[in-house]
Structures are given as C-alpha cells and as structure tokens.
Image (cartoon, rainbow, N blue to C red; front, side):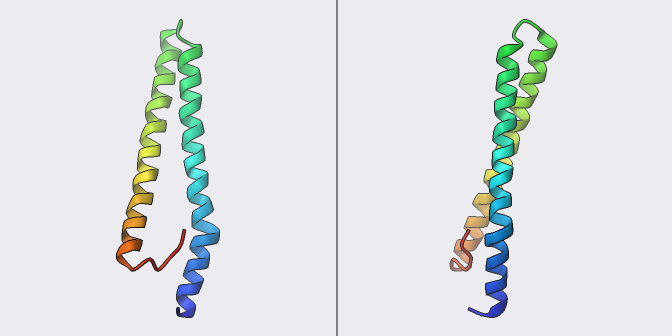
Length: 85
C-alpha cells in the first residue's frame, strides 16, 4: 500500500466514517421527532401535518444516506476493497 493510500484510508477512517454515522443518527432522530410530533398532536391538523412532514423528510434523508453508503461500498468493492470503513 502506497503512502497516499494509507493517508486516504486514515482520512476515511477518522473523518468520513464518524461523519457518516453522525448523519445517520441525526436523520433517525429527526424521523423519531416527527413520529413523536405526529402522535402527540393528533387533535391539531396543522401540527399533525408538520409531524408528517418531519416523518417524510427523515425517511427521505435516511434513504439518501443509506444509498450513498451503498454506492460507496459498491465502488469500494469494484476497487478491490482498497478502503475499510
């Protein structure tokens, strides 16, 4: 492994991997917040719609994040598993 590959692997390991996990956690918490708002505000249609929007955006965010992770894994497999994350 060349020194450049080692540096890139360390950057992925120390920066991007925790950042990816943090974005997954934030999107999931946003989704849970929307579910909580939706359930607690069933009597108020405006707040209930706001909770629905949080649920929708949280789901879309999780889908995008997991899709990007899948694409990264796919391309990493094509490159022969050069990087571990």
